[in-house]
Image (cartoon, rainbow, N blue to C red; front, side):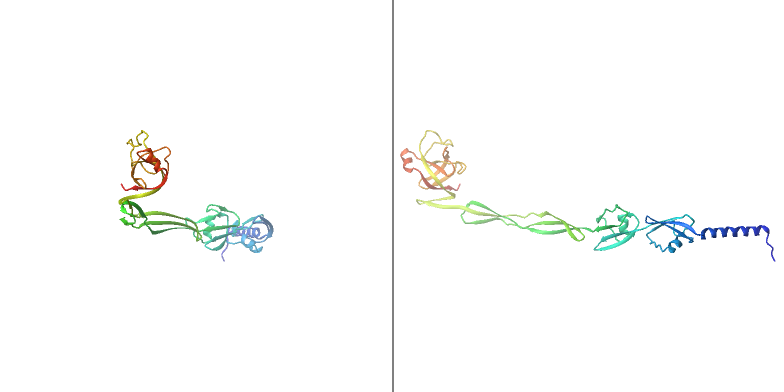
Length: 319
């Protein structure tokens, strides 16, 4: 039979005493405070760990709740346990709602916890960097931008010009019209599939070429067996005048065939044919000759009086 030395026996006794003391320390009744989400609970317990005490008191904690000290920690008399409860945040995105339990965090991180992937252009309410510390709703608005391009025809225009070298009623095609092309660029912005902004700009790829048509303006009239071509005819109130001793507005000597006109209506130097008078030339003006009035020169005062005042047709002759 082996004999133990007195020292060995002493060590065993001391170790046993320490173990007994520790067992007694942790297993005796303890006063513990539990602060759960701001609510304080005082309890008496023989539990040795935080987890044991929570189980004993039927206090459940989720994976998102934070317990301090850790649930595996030993309890001692006077221990204080803090439970920081996670709160619910509702994330609305893509037509569905996802509720997550979380500790205070940024909006972006909470959305990631909900398993929702964010794109660079997505709009989030509140903003990505906002810090959430209590139950809230987060809305993710999907932003989509589209660019649609379309080639469209540009119809050509028809330009009609009067040509007094062509008989009245005759037409002549000078330039054939050609359609052009324009590119329509439409930019569309959608929020959750709904159009919220739409702009369109046009870029001319090929300009349209106008069609140019000449229309005859030359008309032929006959008076006393004499034919003349005219470009325009006017109905005017004619008066008569005779020698005054002054030259005409063009500096010429008054003579039969010279008439005074309003240059705004008939330019000076225009060749005319006037019913009841004959061929004439606009060379003079007069203070009272305005608008549709015309003054005809006669060689004698008697001839001027005989003509008097009457409405006549004035033909503007082709140059």
